[in-house]
Length: 415
Ligand code: RNT
Ligand code: ZN
Image 1 (cartoon, rainbow, N blue to C red):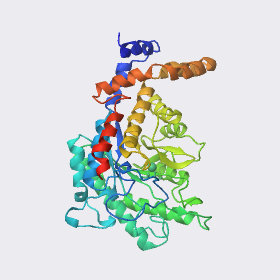
Image 2: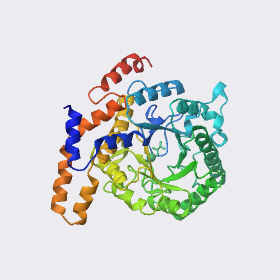
Image 3: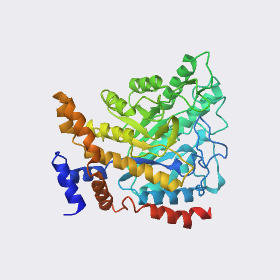
Image 4: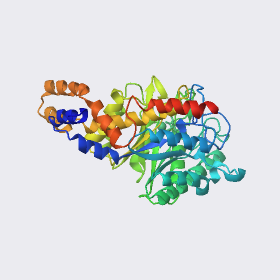
């Protein structure tokens, strides 16, 4: 008997069908963010990263052109099992023959190359308007700015992005999740908190007034408690964003697990939101003390978030996207690690005896629940994971990193 066969038997004793878990996971899309490859720089401006987010580090080999970014992404995908969706930001527009337009004038054609890239690989596309790293961010504000012209510019950007999202969905045949996040906020105590939020609300409403097919475009609002330089106040706080989504038909709340106070857990928020929303969206990241956007690991909270999605039978109701950026280590490895680890967390969740555990909870057998839950940690999960990688034709743990070293030597070091 090989290791997989033996592990499968052990899981079967708990009522878990590992073959079924593997088959199920193969078809669940996870969105791979293009911005890990170039430190969220994009191609449309040459300024610094703003909006209260930061990449630290200067490892060799950052992708500098669309071709380099796509080649790197291709490499990452070849090392990751499971179904991928492409996640693009508006600042990754590709202007051919130097015909640059500003963000309020973006058109589908500026993303034709991304569509080609996605279609060739059978992927859907998710999209994000870029409300940061741009000279028209006025005094740190965009959609909630008191300056009408500024607001107007960013509303037009949002509308352009709706049209581009619709184009992505039509081209790929897969719905496009369009996420609205701004870094709007104040460093110190504001005098007026409601004013910016009312303007933010009205601006998003104007963006969503752009016609689109609700089955094809899934607009989201992402909340955030604070950012670097906007420590005192954000326009898009948790209460603001959640209530906005709840009161606007077809708009989804997006939770990024780096965007809450450090003791708040998104794993606990997922089932709370699923009681009310038909669909929700996630940004999966790893905060350390703040929204630091570290590489996603196979750690406790990552596993717990995946478990909640699976336990709530919500794999089809939760749009999952990765969102982190680390420039201090090999970017291709960082990218691959995060994707593989979220896959691991999902597979682990699918191999958890959820029915048995729920029964113990409902029968108030809480002593046994604690014992079984904790013993699950030392089940032979690695053997199931290796088998999943094999069946997806990608390298197992302990094997893929060799490819990274080679790519660094042959490709990245020449940049
Ligand atoms: C920032 C938000 C946002 C960005 C991306 C690049 O804190 O998480 O989602 O990370 O849009
Ligand atoms: Zn995010």
